[in-house]
Length: 476
Ligand code: NAD
Image 1 (tube, rainbow, N blue to C red):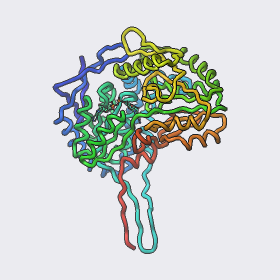
Image 2 (tube, protein in one colour; image 1 turned 90 degrees about the vertical axis):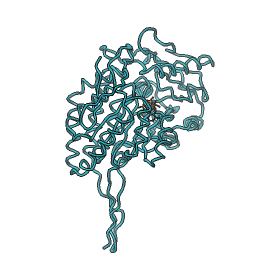
Image 3 (cartoon, rainbow, N blue to C red; image 1 turned 120 degrees about the vertical axis):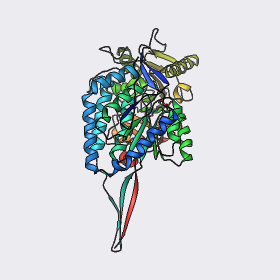
Image 4 (cartoon, rainbow, N blue to C red; image 1 turned 180 degrees about the horizontal axis):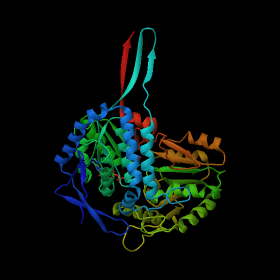
């Protein structure tokens, strides 16, 4: 069985202890991953610290050009890396484009684009103030070493979101992938490291305690974390000890509200993927759908037809549109929430029972006759289940959307965009989409409010988030 190596200071690093990475569609062991020791975490941070001054001192144009080379490496290895995403994470290979499955090839295409965009953006010097007596310029400086901790749902794309803006802005990086999906990230970093100076990008791997050692290291100047709120709270508390700043991209429980004038037939496909992209294992998926009573049955019928038509299976098999749930813990959570809803009297419109056999397969499930307060509505299910809640008054639907302590995304569906915008402005979420859901873009800032975190990624704001302002104040 092959052991995949970490990359520290440009060299492969193994550890005495290893753990297995498994294919969630088959249970097959795919390879072994090093369990980094505390000393290895410290070595990775030291390598990043040593490389950072020279990296930051390079002309900006050189770093931009190197990021463009990184994008070429991603493109050149996209198929190899997409297969790793499918094998480890489960999403089908699929293809790129409006009619095709947003699977692993789509993830790799996203990695390429989310590398090219920060590479082409500029961070201009802002003029804060100028008069006859003084000139005050705001420059942007890198933090130094970024410690990045990633989840398992979009393992390579989220790693790229953390790595590329950080490097582009003159930071160096130590990244820890999720223990469920490490190999793809280690392979991605091995490949892109070939065009980067040694020490600029380093990896460590292992469970939460390895991430905790990274957060505790005083050599880390900023933490970028994407994952659950529970882990985010632990990291924020640990980071406070060294006063290390953090970006927190945490979980959500996005509400989608269909206004009474929505068009169920025309909007069903957008709603469907808004809820079931990556089997619902996406931070900004629609996780509860509020439908006006006049539209309820039509919406349920449209979504049911789509859910039942999607072939589910091993993502490497041609024609697969839906893969497995990535890990057993998540599978059990989905199962528990559906069983509880059933026991409490909800209607399971389709799905609702685990698929027998190897792999974590759970069918696409729609649940109706359910209300706010039910665990399936109030907890982040992060899986292929959508509760559909009937409402009669739009103000009540808005109050429902806002009643939880999270606010990552939300969406409003209507044939009247002005009306939808008015509703959107009353929703507490980092992004409110109108007639689409989860449609992130590399130029558009993305982040949560309330318990969904703080700070943003993407676009110029995302680049600013991995730098700190330095004022140069000149007396005239
Ligand atoms: P998780 O919090 O369990 O794990 C995320 C990472 O944190 C893993 O690498 C894990 O090893 C590490 N970790 C665990 N304990 C740690 C500790 N004490 N110190 C440091 N690191 C530690 O999350 P997950 O289950 O991998 O991901 C799913 C969650 O992530 C969902 O809630 C989802 O909504 C959220 N998510 C948010 C975004 C976003 O952009 N807002 C994107 C994707 C996923």
